[in-house]
Image 1: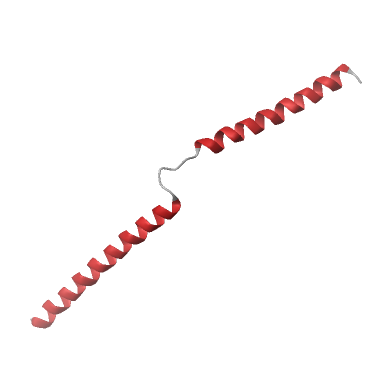
Image 2: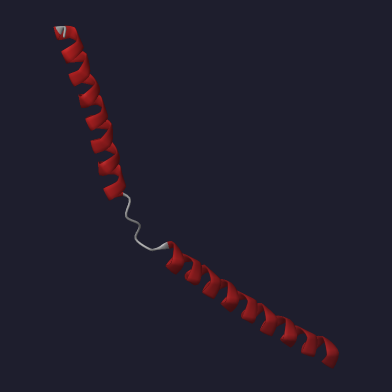
Length: 68
């Protein structure tokens, strides 16, 4: 085996090891402060409260329009 072949083999191993370690580091850093399930529940809760307040406001508006 030629010395250049050995160095090439070591270089390829180092490149793959570098890629592996880079992806491992990025995977550990991506922690979100809130989970997607909690976020969805928060949005749905906000939407339902908004819908209920709009429904009540429209009902009151109809009552006022019918009284006049």
